[in-house]
View (cartoon, rainbow, N blue to C red):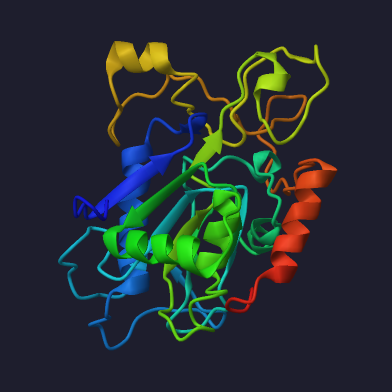
Length: 300
């Protein structure tokens, strides 16, 4: 990116998955991102006492000149196992969107960092949140601006020892080194739940990860993709048949990997609460150490 002066790039892990309606998700994300980083031109706008703004009533902002996501961002953390927001304020609100059809029931949404599970108790199911983040883990998908690439290269090579990429991102977004050393305040934006998830194929579970060891011979009978509803990987035949759906498309032919829970009479169960994902003792220990070591902005 830096060598060829590329303005921005999306970087995916090789097992990343996403909803077939990703382009619509990113369009909404861009609206939220601009509201978080662009100068506001509206004198008044709707904001709750807890500094939350609805996606459908965002304040007017100056138009961006370099990116549809705004001019002042370093990282868009689009795929993660959990992320925390910076302390909320009028300049750092949380943006929410109700009745988002790409968001599964909370019972499917499991995170190592439990912020989403706490926030979602204050919102109905199928709510998506957008915020500035200072703590995260896992990196199924990140977008990097040219400015962010330059800052990230400097911090990863000059300010710290090399570690797993998500640990580097965590410290980068938490400004663990930059502000202490008189550097810039890094701007990282995320959405919760994560837009990109880890796809796990049917078959031998030992191939899932080279970090979390699984006993040999343990078999997964059915493929999974965390909380992704219309998984792109699971819906490849339908994508080949009808193409990428637009907002008015008939989705009846697509397989829903995370259908809403129903009771014994087939009636949808509302208000299902989320639970922390059992990610294994080692991963949870690593997350706890990472949080303890993070000296970035305050967690919310």
